[in-house]
Image (cartoon, rainbow, N blue to C red; front, side, top):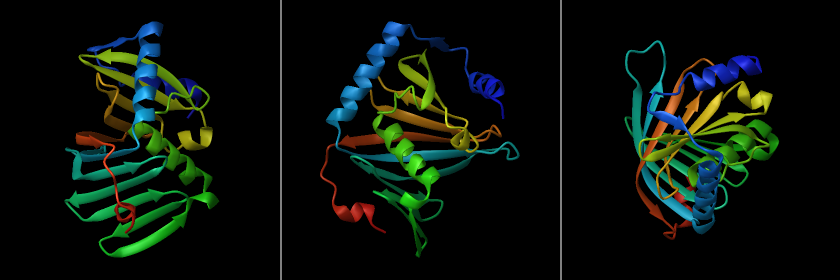
Length: 205
């Protein structure tokens, strides 16, 4: 998909309630979010994940619990409608599919390594890197919405864009990952708890 078409697809997701931020407002949001990320060493949260596929009449809904520990440990524990756990732990990707466990070395797979970095950054909000993304800032009611378009052509083959919704406190409320096909995964967080000590077992299978 060429760059012009990708940008057009990205902005086709804009709603009428969204207004573009001024440069000053965008800079203030960056500072707020970065400060919050620097203050946050751990996060636990409930989440609801919606997987949208164009050929289905309704989204596939999953629920679970997320745990994050700086700098790049992330655990996704799905509880409904099935039991499934995915852990990004340092240079390892661990998967427990209802008792069937597997492990992948991220150091030998640059794409998964980058994905781990992006997931961690999207959770803690520390991903305002213009070298990695084309970035656009919007206000949507009482929240801030930021669109990230990956510059890496290889990564863009899998993820066309990230949309991240930030609260007034600078915390991540929602992450939306849009595929080149137009299908997307939307994750909504709730019951966020910060800087609570997390045992190492949280990031084990």
